[in-house]
Amino acid sequence: MERKQVEELKEFLQEKVYTLIYVDFANPKNVMVSHQMDDFSFLDLEHFAKFYVFNDNFMRVYSRKGPKHFDYYEIKKEDFEAGYDEKIFFVDYSQYQKLHMRIGKINGMPAMQYLYFE
Image (cartoon, rainbow, N blue to C red; front, side):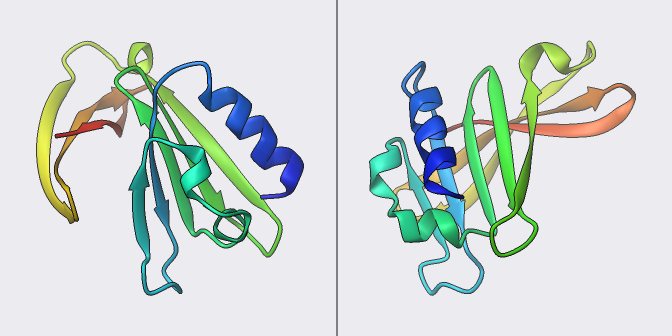
C-alpha cells in the first residue's frame, strides 16, 4: 500500500474495533494478528500477500496484485442470505486459537466472513 492508502485505512479503523490479520508468504513471521494498525510497519504494509480487516459485522480482504497494486473486497453481515451458519475453526496464531466464521451464501454463491478470535 502507498502511504496515502495506509493513512486512509488507519482513519477507517478508528471508526470501530477490528481484528487485523497480516499474511506474507515470503516472510518468516508470515502471519500476524492484531487489533492496532500501529503494530504493522509501513514495510509490512508494502509487502503483504493478504491483509484481513474484520469484526462481527464486516470484513475487508486486501490482496496483492503487483509490486504497488492491490485490490480488496468487502463482505457485510447483511449481505448473507437467510440460513447462514457460524462455525469455529481451530488455528494456531500464538494466543489466538479459535476463529469464528460466518458461512453461507451471498447472491447464491458460497461465502465466508471472519468474525472474531477467541
